[in-house]
Length: 335
Image 1 (cartoon, rainbow, N blue to C red):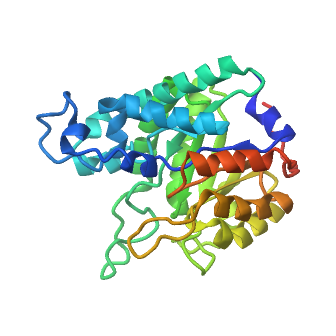
Image 2: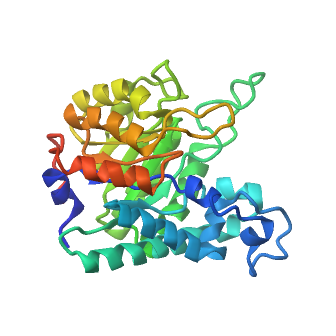
């Protein structure tokens, strides 16, 4: 199968859409989240979407299938919070490796099925690595600004466990996404780099930051340019942005990034901004029309969707990219 690095030079690749939005449609209750295996677990599990890879694997498989059928080249594993730091909220730290392994295995099975059906359009699995619910460079307590809820070393150890499970399960790419604290991302990248060197792995890495609001900065205060410099010390498959903003609001920041990075660029914005009830109203057609601005202005190499997006959003985006060439970039990751 042709390497993804080579394919990126030929065409724009399509990432999948939201996992959480699709899971919500199933309306799973506490018993569904527990399944047979975790009936006696000591704390509530509803809301732990990543656990569904173990207790409702058919649902997760179907979501991946729907995105591949919509035209996605890459699907993300259901592992956004599958790290010991995040799983501590559910007293599930001991299941972190299995959560990542099984989630990657499910996604890889679907990717292989679609690749076999059409070898000219190979499908890939990106191991989703979220930011955790703690920040390494900021205090959660305004009265104690010097306090840190987690150390860099603790993050590295936690990320290594997650990455080992993802790679063993079959992930083709590692996606460090929704980066709001760059120090957390650097811990993830350090963990990945150590594992790659120690195990002689050849697995590409994507990084996707989050511009939190109209200030144009990440939560930890970095501009587009500062963020790009901070994470470009290792070879990346792509650098981009996701979440928090819709395609319209994200445009100026993606444009600045595309002008300054030598890596391929990616974007997976939300389906607009949430309404008063926290839901996303932007239709697939509306989002497609906004994404066309990215394509017409040659800003991206990888495009998909985040919160509120569905297979229908991805289907229209996948159709749109067919008529556009990928952004040219200098860095070549043939290793």
